[in-house]
Amino acid sequence: MRTFEDHKGKYGTDYRKVLSETRKVLGDLSKYIPEYDSEQGYEIAGFIWFQGWNDGVGQGNPDYTEQMAHFIRDVRRVLKVPGMPFVIGELGTDGVEAGGWIETFRKQQVEIAAKEEFQGNVLLAGTAQYWPASQKIMEGKWEVFRAAAKVNSDKAKDDTSRLDPGEYYRINWEEKYQKELSFTSDKRYHYLGSAACYYQMGESMGKAMVGVVKGK
Image (cartoon, rainbow, N blue to C red):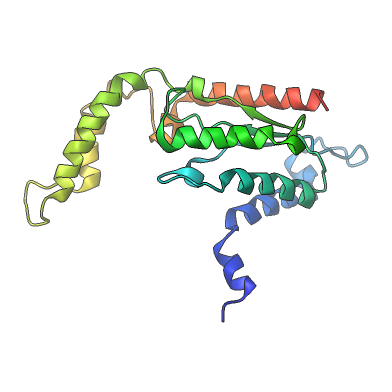
């Protein structure tokens, strides 16, 4: 018979890591911030959450809105900061014209921030507008590559023309389009590793947090 602890071991690992790391830092602030004044103390002024790809990728997650709402409530309760300002970074992958599950997921993020209980203390920060514009140039090439990569993968293993998927990607994408991809260093779900994109998304979330804190 499975126990609660058995189920607990499979789920919520990253959530517990977030709280564990937070407690570790708060428990020894002078180690991480040498200038920390223990007499003055500290305040948990806000929480920024920027994640989502794994929560919705593929078929989507119809329960995400409520799950995220529970997350906000739980973090506030555990950290003992009721009404703590909370900023959700929009899933900006594929830019403002994204469709499919990404479009649906963004609507769920809007629904979270729109909940009556979160008015004035939870804000959604836009990030899609900062998706690297140069990606548009590569979209058609990517679809052609994917089709060819599938043909390669479908070949029998004893077919000498078949390449290992990783090798196929390196030769037919990374090397072939090295110049076109010079602005990036990572996969689509990591915003192509674009420093400009990350900077602007971070600035958007930071400004949103300032707005929530000032509006308290």
